[in-house]
Image 1 (cartoon, rainbow, N blue to C red):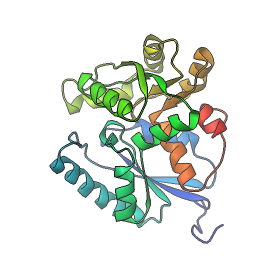
Image 2: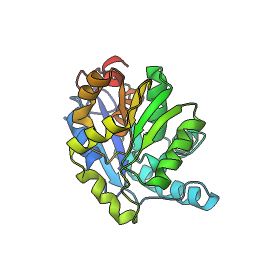
Image 3: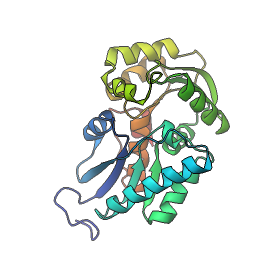
Image 4: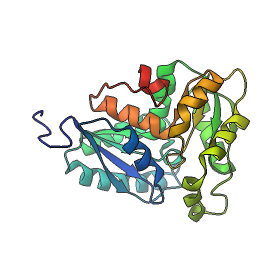
Length: 248
């Protein structure tokens, strides 16, 4: 056991995880991927649909700082704000850098993790599959484009168009539907497939889709998990969760 974590279960690292209130997939997929000696500890936080106005950003930071303060008491090595659309703020490192500075613990956001993962894989041209409605899809396309990516195609399933209460349906999407959605979205010439939303079930599909299309597959939960492990100094490689975790 190291000096920081004299714990039966967390002797290598402790990770903090902040999820939206309806999210149930993130924890399930992280549980499958978590290596021995590493644990994660979760807190839910309200969704913040406005991340562009001064008031909206201030409200988001207020809630995040409160949750960071609580998770920090568990002596976590890093904290992830695991909300894809809600963390898509440019410059991409502005939110995690601000949180790291103000909270005194390393902060990771899903959007920053995705950008970092795509850069690590050396890809630019993307086919993007989401569960979202048009407004969030437009927001995501703008975010990716502003970060230097070429969105060859981005298609959503339209979930959430009737209001935030509809978001619970994202976790209920069958894996077969997710796979068919990716196949319908993929455009030849794309260098990677990006599947976004931390509540979208994708983990069992990653290696199959990579073999089928011959390009890396990056997902919100996989990229956030990868970024958090590396931030905590855990360099383990994994064979079952895509090229990102196998090679980087």
